[in-house]
Amino acid sequence: MKRALFALVSLLPCAALAASLQPLSAGDVAALVKPPTHGERIIALWALDCAYCEGNLSALATLQRAHPNDIELITVATDSYEQHDMLQMHLKMAQVDNYPARAYTEASPDRLNFLIDPSWGGETPRVLVIRANGSRMGISGELGPAQLQRLH
Amino acid sequence: MRRLLIALLCLCSPALFAYDDMHMDMPKEPPLGASAAFDSHGRLWIVDAADGHVRLRHSDDDGRTLSAPAIVNSIAEPIYAEGENRPKLVLGLHDDIDISWSQPRAKPWTGFVRFARSRDHGATFSAPLSVHRDRAEITHRFDALAVDGKGRVVIAWIDKRDQEAASQQKKPYLGAAVYFSWSNNGGASFVPERKLIDQSCECCRIALSLTPNGEVAAFFRSIYGDNIRDHAYAVLHVDGRASHADRATFTNWKIEGCPHHGPGLAIGSDGTRHAVWYEAKDKPTIWYGQLQPGHAPTHLLTVANAGASHADIAVHGRTVWIVWNQVSASGYALMLRSSTDGGVHFSAAREIAHSTDAVASPQLLQKRNQPFVAWNTAGGFQLVPIRAAR
Image: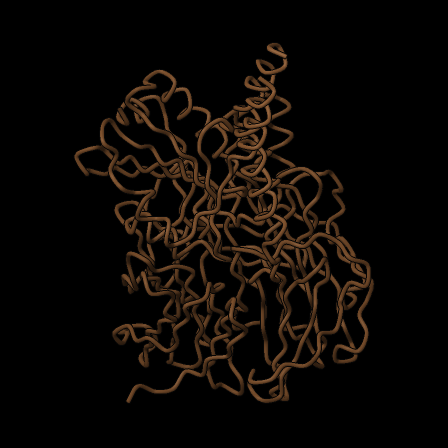
């Protein structure tokens, strides 16, 4: 029984991770962009129709793993949550399916784009860094090594 | 111990089921990608996609009521109908209805460009055909459709065959290519496709407009140098002459990514190439300009900034209209700026419609020279008339 319990407990995180994609509606944005209590939150905005996005997600995950106590990483897909299965597949391919993940609930992305970051026009990939002191930094496009360093 | 095990299972399962339920219960509405056009009698035609079918509806009261849908492709297939990808509709000679769309294939970012037409006002449709000879499971997407002055159907699209070939040879290749083809027999078949340009942007719609002599011109986002995503202009010759694309915008926006914002083009009867495009080098900006291919555009104007997206443009005589979506916390405004002096000066921005529901890109239409905007919203299709400001 002990072994079964151990096996089940080890499975729990996987089960939770496999189902981690959650919808993001306009009412959720305030909490998403609220400054963290310490360190910084990196919001990795991506889209299915974006050949540059998976590489960017992977690079941000690598950065997060190098600073696990200071960086909170959340992935946000601008595609509809209805495409849940496809989104999960891409998150897995980019090896970021163990991070909190959201997907838009609206049929077109523009309003949520604007609510998350008014200085962003929807191009992807986009990274939004929100620091504990309330400051923000947004960068569009796949991040090079120099830009990645600027994030932290 | 057993109790602990059960407690753990109970903790775990509701969370999983909750996600499953949410996924299962979310209603799947038809995607918002749609196109509209008036025929020569003033009847409005609209195409969109639902449940694997491109569907065609019409309206004889300027969009207030729509007919039951006619199914264009009798056999269901996947259809791109979101964002910059949407079924296209053009009325050809004798009000023939020409329709194109992009069909997703199994792998991500792949597609085939499809075409069907009706010669009996939507009663029957030709069997859909794939326009390109290349059948590799790669990107042939973002179709753009026009009918030239002689009634030839012209289709341009974004194509990754050259990117794939370069990748196999481990050679650098940015973005995708633009290919085009045309039909000399009313859409029964298309000539083998031609490449217009290598290394163009891979995720933005292509704008088409007719030149005064009836040729089809294309305006699209290309790539210059190291991911500078400015736009190119080309006339798509269908008479054997080579087509050549020239750089036509010079914003120098560098982005190794997908802008998801294609441009708009409307060529006046005097040949003036009125255009709108998006860039975000310093901040999100929609520009207006008159294209001088090979050189910087003239009459440059910032149309709108933050929250503005997906502009379209139309011209009639000296009047030029620009519409776009302007988003705010309260929803979407359909905005208008117009010019009565051929694009030299434009009016201030004016809201002509509002939606709290999600919206698709606006499309300018003209019915006997009267301007309208086709605006598909999650709350329903709207045809918004453009009236002179009071």
